[in-house]
Image (tube, rainbow, N blue to C red; front, side):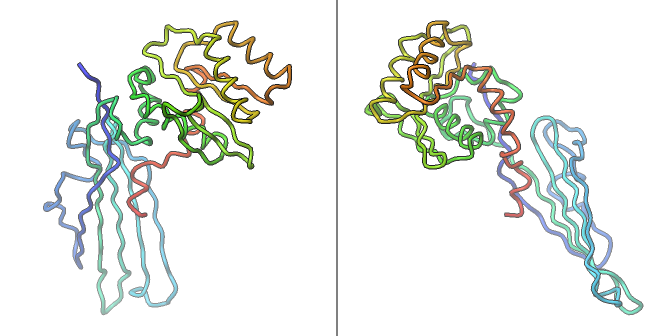
Length: 266
């Protein structure tokens, strides 16, 4: 049975306005923060308020409040309220926008799986990294390393790529990247492939290289070859990144992945 990933990046919004109390009976969903899939009240992640008081006239003042909820399944809900002050002659007018995450389901090996969703999912289910499409794996490595090194990335992995899948450009210094997705973590990355990548890097006139694999580890000979390349001044860096190290990099760059509810205001 194929595994799937639930994505809540997309959303819909409903708007209410009234000079009386809100009537949420017409809401598409139940009370704010109630997950329609799990049938439970979601956790409140954010609660904030603001006010714009620039006049002695209370009716000219503006107020607002926001609450964001997220369920363990990934579904989310956001409530944004705004209202005016009141005076002896004017009542308060109120506006409410309720935004709900919409679920989409992707196969783990889908090419159109959003990278932000995949990066969040890998923090919960790291084992699915072995089931990704090889092109999605290259895209994932590019996005993660781009955040980690704070640089631009170019995908170049094709049959005629000369052994280099990605190019990272950091301070005008290109970094060659090789990406290998293994079907199991019970695999040791062999020395011959490390040597081949070293040769491809040198043929392109590059002196910085990163080899990323979902294998459990690199063989002792592979690590020795990478070390010798640096010792003999063939390259200035040759990073070997195995499955665990790559997952740690994903976790360390998690703050660069915008939560889906933050996109409702863009």
